[in-house]
Figure 1 (cartoon, one colour):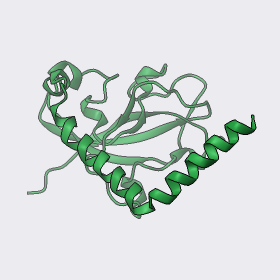
Figure 2: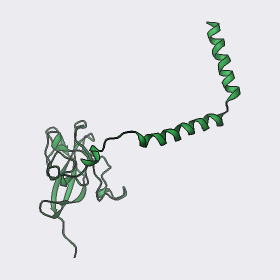
Figure 3: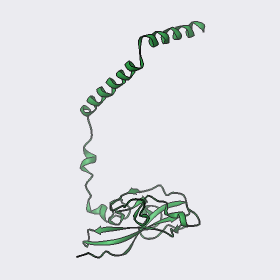
Figure 4: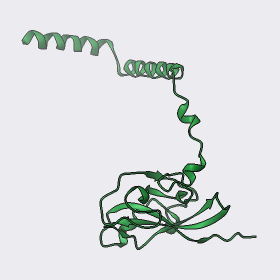
Length: 174
């Protein structure tokens, strides 16, 4: 096997003598530029873009991320996890702290104040993940920020899913 080692050592030394780090970076840059030029030429599917519109049926489907109450939801939808849009699944408890959002109901044209409560105590649901951040505020305004594990005040801080309960009708300032 000495011949095998000698062969690769000789080849490695030849490459090291003839190539510098700059030439390796230049070759890598040419490869990346060449692939960037070729990628737009490749075929692609436009069906996903055409289907991205929000059909009415999704706006009223409680298991859909496009459901109107889910405008500021970040987490798993409890309607897909054994609960409903406003109640936690069996075996979980509602979070003691919450965040709020204002969502527009296209069915009646009114804006509603929505309380997003995490359901705690059981491992993550893992179904119907939704991350909509309409009206989200920076993290220093905790009551309107959705990127927090709101189970932190409960006896078990294990997050399962999130409900979207209507608290009231938002008043129009005029």
